Amino acid sequence: MPDRLSALDASFLYLEDPMTPMHMGGVSIFRKPRSGFDYDRLLGLIEERLPLVPRYRQKVMQVPAKLARPVWVDDPDFDLTYHVRRSALPKPGSEEQLNELVARLMSRQLDHTRPLWEAYLVEGLARGRVAVVTKTHNAMVDGIAAPDITQVILDVTATPRRAKEELWMPHPQPSGAQLVLEAVAEVVQRPGELLENVHAAALDAAATVRKVTDAVGGLASAVTTAARPAPSGPLNVRISTQRRYAVARTRLEEYRAVRRKHGGTVNDGVLTVISGALRNWLLSRGEAVTSSTTIRAMVPVSVLGTNGNGERPVGNSVSSYLVDLPVGEPNPVVRLHHVSHAMRAHSESGQSVAAEALVRLSGFAPPTLHALGARAASSFSKRIFNLVVTNVPGPQVPLYAAGAKMMEMFPVVPLAMNQALSIGVTSYDGGVYFGLNADRDAMSDADVLAGMVEESLEELVGAVSV
Image 1: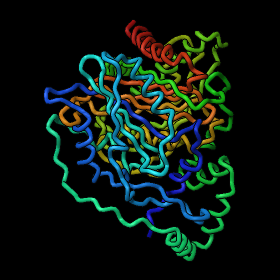
Image 2: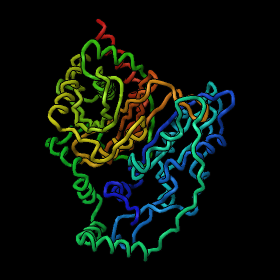
Image 3: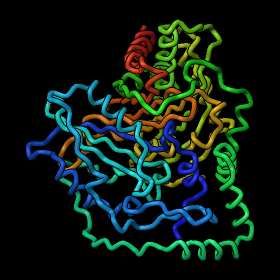
């Protein structure tokens, strides 16, 4: 039987356009070891680990007349050097220059005639560092057949684990006639499939989303929790094809200190900090902010089993919440209590979306879970939330790629249609790292908002310590 894309995976291909490319990104900053870390070393590392992610040597092939959803097939012309690329900043490369490069890379769609991923080694950063920037299409990252490539190149020690050597020989690419015969064979087993697929080919993108949302099952139930449309504002505008990217850095211990004083979770603290930053950003733009002003966030949260104190992850799942961030509240502690109450109410009412509907994971995989969060959010009507915020807990120990220590990691979450901002958050080795992906025209001040994230945490910690 063909390796056919699921309805959800196919939707990301059907709905993609130049204004809303459907790929997740990541920016990992590494410190060079004494032995060096260059393009050839990264290329060799990825080549060695590719057997762990066979999807990364496969491409999408359409079925003639769209009689069935597309299939994954081995790419007989797979060229690793096309997917793993080299770039450089003028030395000493600044963070602003790196962010500008990331924005330009993320603005471009992936080539649908090839395997749907790219990785860039960016050299020339100040202080002897390098960056690895990855792009992976949401149709690929299902957490089972294809976790994100970053997940498989990282090791827990500076000595790389050795992967089993495998000789890869691509399976012959099926002909159009074969794909039609296989589609017909499936119709014999499911008579309604052919009519459904032919009808879907004639539908517009919005109707396709409705079809896919219904197919996901567990995800669709969450739509009923948001009868009210999301508040209007500067985050919901017609977006362009170009992006801006900005980052913020905070420390995990500060969120833990807030939690010890006021309860809740680290994620509650993160959302409170984002609420405060958005409040100050709106005020800086001269927007009207009243005590009742809110911004609704779709929050696909990695929900991890814990050791009893809410810290140590022992398993993975993803739940999605709609949270009205209290940006109108001037008191950061009161904001925290509002967020904690909202998140607790969602959890207790069963309005979250269980990840088992999409994926079962084990181990550490922040990039993959960010992608799954973006996939979950993409299945909802964009009219019911203003932005996506993904927050994925990561390991509190250093990770390495080919002996190079990863110092920081920032997610890049794709924008939804008519939404000017998405925020990804990852905790790693004592830090909490924010990646802000924004529309270039609508948010020329994305870097200002990133700075306000750090200021918002200082405000919250200061209020808690009083």
